[in-house]
Length: 366
Image (cartoon, rainbow, N blue to C red; front, side, top):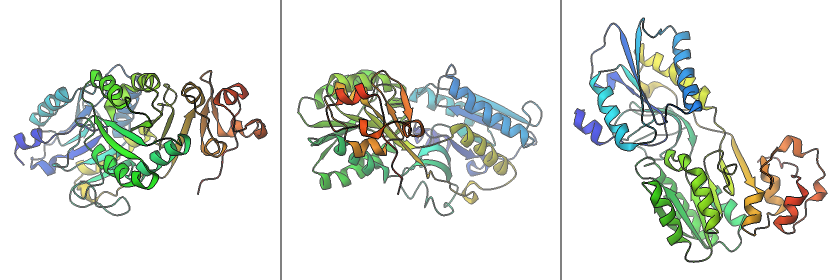
């Protein structure tokens, strides 16, 4: 593969990936080198924890930084242009593998904590061995898009339109989730509008335009850009009276209406990624490593946001929630909620629900 083709094709999604050196046709050095592209700012504590877990696991596997491996880390803070520059610099260093938060269908990859792009060129099946030099630790598949729509419609009976907001540069895989929403929307009488944004100023302009007509709602697929701006999006969605749901954990806690997504131990996945790097450094092909998908999901709803939007949260929907955020911002887990009196919940106004400060018994998952 030509270097300029690699860099030109580099997309910026929210999914760490591994590019094995053998896939780039590079020779093997006696002392190994691993590049790391982090789609975070270095000041982010959680990102430092991810990197530390990765390095610690490599050490446990016998790869000691400064001894038999060198680790080059680049932080881009979600800046797409900087990510491409950093990728070019790392490729020039001729590493044996790259752990990255930028991925592209044009190169062999191992996804970690990312959305399943759903295209055959990425991964053949999450249940089978992947083809070529591709594998991943996944977080989502396209079927979750229908659940986002169902949850919004279940809460907002007058919903007739949904905007699907994402940054095409940082989440190219969001196009597949957009298509899934478009496919599911007619069955519930909802029209779908693509809402691409590339800079923070686009967010308000896009939401203000969309909100000019009534009956709107907002869906946020997994995207590092929208995660970084989750508080702003939640605030603007409230200002423009748009019920919202996001894939990213923490959106409801940031003031959004709901979030529904997979339960991911990101630190654990970075440790597992180190295991995959170890195998690649020992001669394995990425395509021979098994794909691992998500199988657990969490649903959180914010009653304060519902009240501000004038929405009544139905008891069955509350019964599905793993966590409920009260009007004062306190979060109740389903385990503690089971100890409360369920009959305090009645289908009355959201204000009454907020005053009750209780959450329902969690319903069994099917």
